[in-house]
Figure 1 (tube, rainbow, N blue to C red):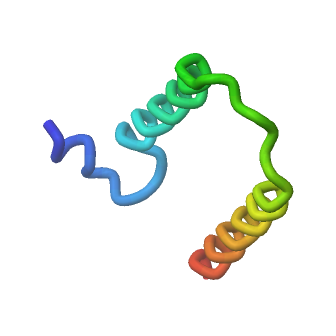
Figure 2: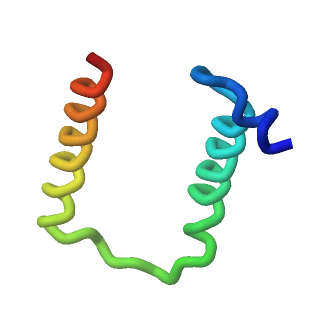
Length: 64
């Protein structure tokens, strides 16, 4: 059974769909179990866009 799920060499397969659904479920239900949170610090506000730009740059370089 697992071999059939992994037989796609590229593209959007069964495993990709399952991972997408798991991430969506986590994003929907994780805030329900968290306690109240404070606002993010200034360092986090600056750090998150820097990390996102680094990931996008890495993906751009890896696709060449």
